[in-house]
Image (cartoon, rainbow, N blue to C red; front, side):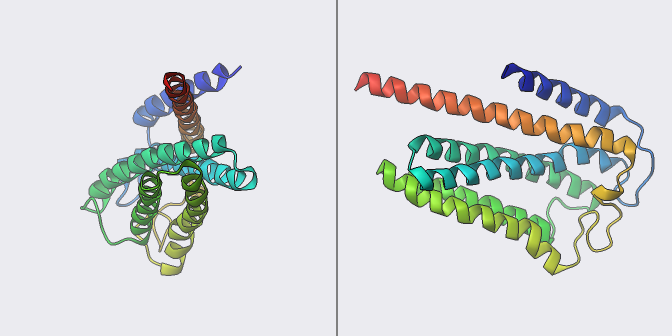
Length: 222
């Protein structure tokens, strides 16, 4: 039955791409205009990244509870997949920023928080690569990964609110919030989020299976 969510992912993403590019925008927001279509891709990428990092966080907790290396494998693989979607979120965000703000990167608390969050997770992978002992690496990186997720929540959710003004829509007097989305956009936005998340889970599953196969091959050679 695992193939059901994979087919659903493809259907939802095809729908989100086609409908997102062809639908008539029901209103004209100042500054944003037609670039509002990037909502279906940029914002969905960030939702996906957060969900995948949450999976990584949960499996790090599970590893520390039972010290099962399989959980460590899932945690690091989820972090890798989350970083991919985070980078896609940064890239699509830079395209959107260049269109609406006139520059791909500006001094904005959410942008800076996103960059810092990704750097924290890149540091997680670097930390893992610097430790050769498998069990020691798993223990140390699991603790780090838990704090990394907490820091991401702070950088993306708490500090921007404390900072106040932001160029992001819906922040600091911006022209739009998700809560105010027109129903025409909602019927694309929500399926888009689900589609990207399912795709990320699919990629995560494939990467885990590949790692398991590689470990079996290496053990057979030994």
